Image (cartoon, rainbow, N blue to C red; front, side):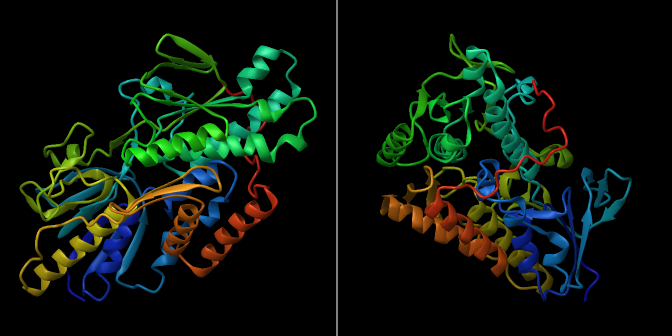
Length: 421
C-alpha cells in the first residue's frame, strides 16, 4: 500500500461509491461522517410515514468496510479545510492530513431566509428528521382523539406539506392513505377519514421536474386520495398553529417542509465560487477551481450537463460522480491519462403517489400507475444494501399491500406526551 492518503468527507451515495471504487488501488482511505450510518435517503419518507423502520434503510458504515483494512472510518464533523497545509479539521480538535480530499457533504433544508420556521416545519434529510415527523403525525391523531374543542381537533387533523417535489408528493400520498384507509377503525372519538392533507407548491404544478402529462397524472392521483393541493402561491408564514398561503391562513398543527435545500459549507471551507444554493462550481473533472487535489461531488457540487442544465441532486448522480472521481484518482496514481470530462447519464426520474401508483420518466418512455409502482419498488429494492434489507423492505411493502396495515407505527421518543408547539 502506498502512502497516498485519500480523505473522504461524507458517507452518502457519492462518498461510498468513491470508496468502493478505490478498492485495490493501493491507497489509504479515511472516511469521515457525522453519523455512523449510511442512509438510503430515497426511502426516508417511508420511515416518516410509518411504513419502514429505521434499520431497514440505514447501515453502519463500519460494518460496510469491516473487510477493507485500507479504509478507516471516523465519526466526526468537519469544521474547516486548510488547502495550503492540506489538512481537514474536525470539531473534536483532531486534524487529518490528506493527499487527495473528496467532499461529499450533501445538503440540508433551505427555508429561504426564514430559518425560524424550522422548529415548526421540519424537513426530511436524516433519520432524526424522519422519526420526528413520524412522532408528530402519530401524536396529532392521539391528541385529536382526546380533544374536546372542534376547532383544535380539526387543526390537529390537518397536515400541511410545503413543496410538491417528489418528497412532498410522496409524503402527502402516504399520510392521506394512512388517515383514510389504515386508521379509521382504530379511533373511537374521531373520524380519521375527515383528515385534511394540504400540499402547497409555489409553482404552477406538482412535480415540476417531470413531464407535464406525468405531473397532471400525479395531481389527479393525489386528489383521488383526498389531498388538497394549492398551486401558484408560496407559504408566507409558518407557525405552531398553522400556515399562511398568500393571504389565506390554514390551521394546521403538523407542518412538513419539502420546499428546498442548501449545500453544506464546503465552498466556504475551500474559499471557491458557489452557486445560489451554496454548491461548489466544480471543474469538468469535478475538482474544485484551482485545487486539483480537492474534489467535490453529490449535492455539494454544481455540475452542468452538456445541454446547459444542472445535474439533478439525486442518488444516481452522486454515485456516478463518486465512481468517476475514483477513476481520476486511480489514473493519476498510475500515471495513466485522465478520464474524459465527467458526463452525467440520466437513468430516469421516479416518484410514488401512495402505495399503488407511481410515475417514471425515462425520457422517451414514460410510465404511470400500477406498473410504474412495481418498477419503482424493484429498482429501490435492488439498490438496498444486503439481502436482509431487501427481504425486509419487500416484506413490509407486501404486508401493507395485502393487509393495509403499516408496520412501523410506533411512537418511541421519551417526550411522547410532552406538548410540542
